[in-house]
Image (cartoon, rainbow over all chains, first blue to last red; front, top):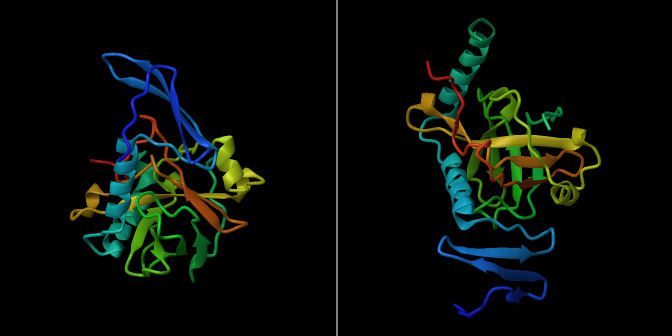
Length: 83
Length: 138
């Protein structure tokens, strides 16, 4: 891993088109600004990982999908009265 | 967008996700189909790894006011010419007790039905829970 020391207002450029700027440093954390082309998605790591974990879980049904589907159809049939 | 254009998914349609799904960048080609007796659930099956199928659903069937706030850049990446071209699906997690099944409203799949190309959008807001219960808890 490349480790670089930057001060406030300084930045690094990645791949010639992504710029990460140190906007502020405080006790609470470091504020970063990111300039990237629209095609580059930028996410907080924990958000990215939470979605990835849900994706993995969605590919691992523990019961036959038909059981779940039957529950959903039964709930849909009940809906008009109960709501 | 609260849209669910008609798609003939019975036999399956082939979709391209150029960036894959989050955590699965290598899976870019999928077949979307409805498994036998699976309505209203659908499977998004990886073409190159058929053992991997993501269970998904039309989120409007779960939460009627669900809308994906698409940024300009996302609409552009999807080459959406009109909102009617967008099909939105959300992934479904079915636990051992299927009554606890949830859908991920924070990571919807948005598919252009004209180009058959899709992206998974990451929504970063408390309004879009990762685990939204599908069945009302009685």
